[in-house]
Amino acid sequence: MKRKQLAISFISILLITLLAACGDSDSSSETENGNDQEESSTAQENNGGDSAADKEEEAAVTEEQASQTSETFITHLDDGDFDEAESLFDETMASEITAADLETIWTDLETEFGEFTGFDYVEDQQVDEYQTFIYEGTFDDQPFVLNVSINGNNEVGGFYIQPSEA
Image (cartoon, rainbow, N blue to C red; front, side, top):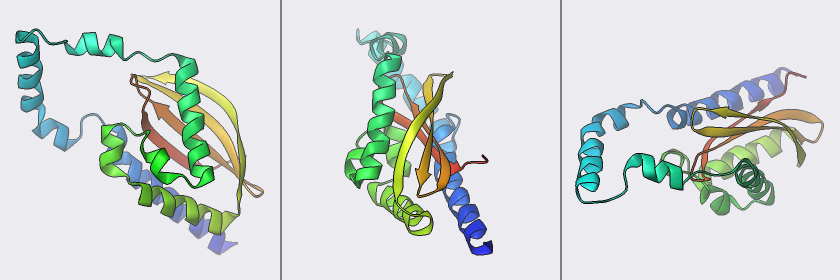
């Protein structure tokens, strides 16, 4: 039992560490590049390009589309299609987590807790510019909470998995 609790703690810490860099829009790399981004936006506006607000409006995704993307992402993980799952990432996620990282995490979960047996929708929430979908998934008899966040471009901008308290 101690081994199982240790494994759960380790996997939770690993996932939190991987995802912490993905969810914070005030990361140091973005701050360091802030001036470049500002200049780029100004140059686009001066050259008749779309402003950031125009692009955001164009990129609006419906709740149904976002839900489909989040479920497709989890299905890719379950099917072992880690490259396909990674292809759904936004730029920030793609720079932090690779298909190999996803495979390692998923394989470790299945090794420790058994085969992934499915997931069910629990709820969704709008958090800033992300539509966040929460599912309850099960590895054999061990319930987990799966949290997938989809940005306005219908890309996975966050993924979090942890053992369920219930």
